[in-house]
Image (tube, rainbow, N blue to C red; front, side, top):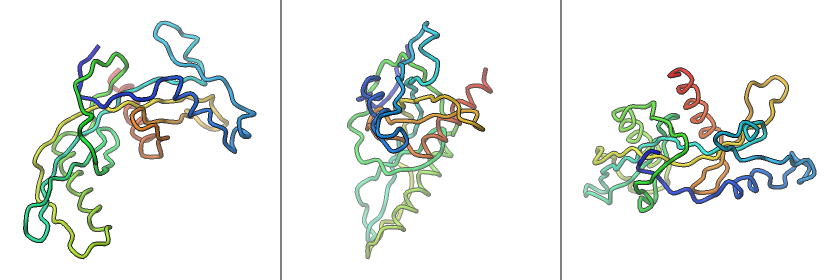
Length: 196
């Protein structure tokens, strides 16, 4: 068990299975649903696809200082994924807390200095895309903290021509992950295999 700064896990394994099994066109609106197991330690049968497991992915919360019309504006938080490097504006930092994590957690593969630079550039790109008369000017990094967020990974039976097939679900927000989150999970799994 590790004690890490992390976001809370809001979706249980059963709720994640229900989201992954939601009726869609690809499963003929629920007719081709297969039972998805939740992986358990010490039970090898629970790890035959399709199954889900929880992984704790690293990220950096970066607080940046910005100037608006020459005056300091409110500090802006961005999050930089610790394995994928993608940047998003962080709207709320109240849910961060030290939590006991039993499941597998990955170390960040991006250094703090690189995360600061990625966060600054990401916020700059974000402000340039907004349609405002006066745009904030990103000054510098005020604070940075490494944290972990939960991701449910659903491993699927291999399809023809693929080595691995999986879906991801953000365990904090309940949103299905896109290509960026899938790439971050793949990067974390590859780094783990290299370390082993």
